[in-house]
Image 1: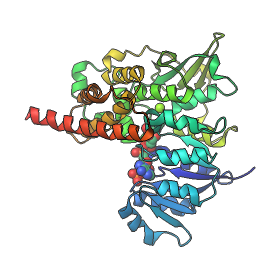
Image 2 (image 1 turned 180 degrees about the vertical axis):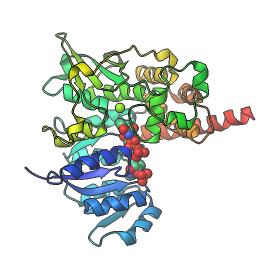
Image 3 (image 1 turned 90 degrees about the vertical axis):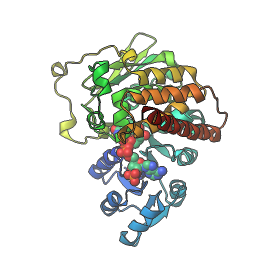
Image 4 (image 1 turned 60 degrees about the vertical axis):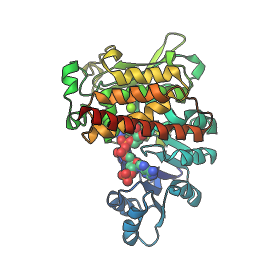
Length: 390
Ligand code: NDP
Ligand code: MG
């Protein structure tokens, strides 16, 4: 079997560490050639010594300066905003994993697709903000493989099927830690409460998004982009245990579901090894089916304003999903920094959407500009509402 030469963008993050664990278990299958991160040089350095990539990229120049003297002599170092793109041009690769947060990696994502490399994509923002400009760059079937667990589930259910046979896809939601909270309890949620997810261990931003259910709303838009479906054909349902990750209903009435342990290493392995499947660990097997106790609940969107706003943005189309992403990023950071309450996250997003959500960008540059202006608007809204409270 050929060795897969891999670049991992976002190596120091939560998804990055799941991807590296798959590589660690199959050193004969995966050769990590590029490790990239933003600024966490101290987390990156031990990974460099473990995986011995040919190239390391750090977005932040100060961090690159710190790591430089400690790197092995044969490891090449790149830094700056273009370092991900440059890395792709300098090392022979088969597969690129985008496990970065934010939208900085979009140009590198387009390059990787144009170069016909296989791409595994965890990053939701790039599809929600730029899906319209990303999807046309796909060069062959299964080139773009979703890592987000629900989308990986749908992608796996759709193997050998045609998109035109779909009547509806369902994403499951664990519901986060506050599914049964009253509106009063919701107002008192602290950052520490929001960061303790009942099922998944993830980066801070996506954990808070899971608690507001903004994450599920963003994932609906992500699925619309990935599988070219209208909002009417994408829905979400509560499955508290996160054993079912997604299902696809077909025109003949059949429904396929993907059931597995909630562990990001499973979607990472499914994407990296496609079309094969890898045995990562015996403990990842499910118990006998009578122990699954699967149950589903209707998602009451009216209790989660962020979920409602995301669906409205999906329906409105144009620039609204972009504004949603920019405003939510700022609102979640403000909540984590103690500047606003948990329930104010939705207020920030709603205000930004009503100010900028009507615009329709016609180029990727316009889209990124709208994203920036949404962040700015949300920031000034946060400052304004704080000043008002004083
Ligand atoms: P983390 O915050 O844990 O990690 C983000 C990673 O991206 C870090 O390695 C960070 O580097 C790196 N990074 C950020 N910006 C840049 C940049 N400009 N150039 C290079 N590297 C960069 O996030 P998660 O792992 O939780 O999530 C990553 C993405 O995957 C997000 O889009 C998220 O929505 C999505 N996702 C996450 C899931 C999860 O289980 N966590 C599930 C499904 C999707 P540094 O450490 O140096 O800052
Ligand atoms: Mg998900």
